[in-house]
Image (cartoon, rainbow, N blue to C red; front, side, top):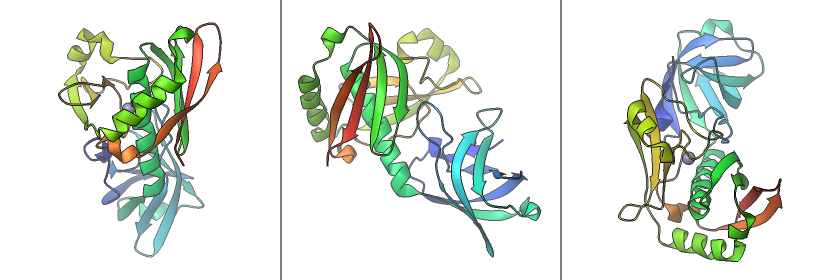
Length: 238
Ligand SMILES: [Zn+2]
């Protein structure tokens, strides 16, 4: 079992950990700052360093349980490192882009009152699929709203609620495709806005602390993926 440090602090760029398992091409740790791919957000990359050795993490994936985090390594791994202390560092530029983009997806969801059927977060662009009446999608109006939300620099919070509370509030699950699992009867809730709540939903990803950090975002193409399915693409403004 790996302690997931990014749930409490998504801004942690470096930390120490102990190596618990080693496979041919992967390392597991007692704690990690590496986010494992899920909910449409890619896994982190970075480095695991020991005295005299360094391993490049090329991807991070979940294992058989949400608490089993597999750090995929480029190259051979010395099996004798099990039990040793190491230093972790994530590719912060990449993670920060994912955090901005992931939070941007929440902003987009707040503008479209529809079920989310899929999402993919990238470092420069992302997409969210909605089961929606296409007549409701006004790109120009939404771009104006996005600009306003970023300018308002709204706070972004995460909190843990119980699995029972989650089940009693089905509106918090905006789409099966992006909902996080309930672990140990707990689920993470992400909220944008304080006095006036812009978006609130269950989500296990990593987010920025305020919408102003996104700086500039716009909707690109809106693709037709079926009668009621629309894929809305977003990208950072250059
Ligand atoms: Zn999220």
